[in-house]
Amino acid sequence: MIRSLPDILIEPVVRMALAEDLGRAGDVTARACIPEGARMRAVFAARKAGVLAGIDCVRLAVLAMDPKASIELRQRDGDAFEAGAVLAEVEADARAFLAAERTALNLLGRMCGIATLTRAYVEAVAGTKARIADTRKTTPGLRALEKHAVLCGGGVNHRFGLDDAILIKDNHVAVCGGVGEAVRRARAAVGHLMKVEVEVDGLDQLDQALAAGPDVIMLDNFTLPMLREAVARTAGRITLEASGGVSLGTVRGIAETGVEVISVGALTHSAPALDVGLDVRPD
Image (cartoon, rainbow, N blue to C red):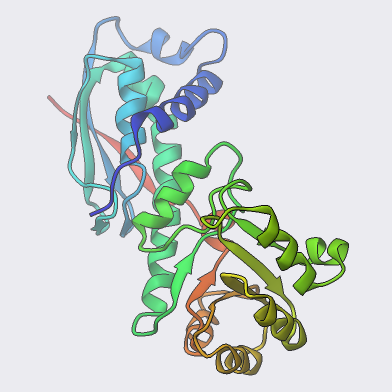
């Protein structure tokens, strides 16, 4: 079961999106066309099959505009659904509901798209020991939601930000003068609970990294033969993460080399939004 994000993390994103949409004068169309006090009932329905993520964005967007709205969530984050599935049903003040509609749909479609793409990657590596991880290639301001959507799809989260793990990349190595020196400096600078990962771009750097003893080694743009050789040389001593050149067409082959983690930036930077619509229901 997927644990929901706390409302306190979602509400600022929802309110910022609503403020952007409402502008200075609010929903002038609804005010012009809809009588004050009118009520409406509608459902959020999936146009395509997928995996649910972001349903609480719908709830919070509607309640922000109409605190007395009645909302029934028919599915929960992490649930798979078919085309036509009703995800949530809402009864609310019509003007308020229509003002919240686009924000709710934008966030729901975005998060469902990420969860659905993640599930496709997870299913592609089924039966191997590889886990699918996200990256920091997220939409500014939406990282918590997007990384939650990855979890909903069955993936795992890489570091959330720059402050929760050390990841030594090629530019760090260049400034430090070598992989081993960079790892040694990192180990000396942090406590025993901070993980240290280092990126390598060849088997020679892999050997240097193994000698220095990080917790994780990222194999950047390795070919399949190089990945297999890296797994053999490491012999389970250190977690190996494959990164770069990963797609749905290549991920199975990468997983079958024996790496434990495959990080995929496309989960968040290239996932297409899932088509979800709002259908008005008669009273």
